[in-house]
Image (tube, rainbow, N blue to C red):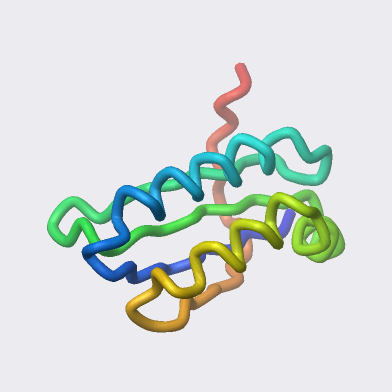
Length: 101
């Protein structure tokens, strides 16, 4: 299992466009066989900050995700919306609840 949290800070004038573009990317991403989970959350006390919680079967599946047309479209579309470069934090699983049951 390969877990990545992507921390994103968006310029306020782009909030709606960023959310729309990211929802489209999320919908396509969850259909990838190598992705176990792909969550998109907004910080409650600072609505310009978001986190993508991406759980892949393997690091190779993340690399495959980055090659998809929908990811590349999202990356290019949201780049000018960023207040600062996004940060990806790779984490290792200790306990992950299984929501499939």
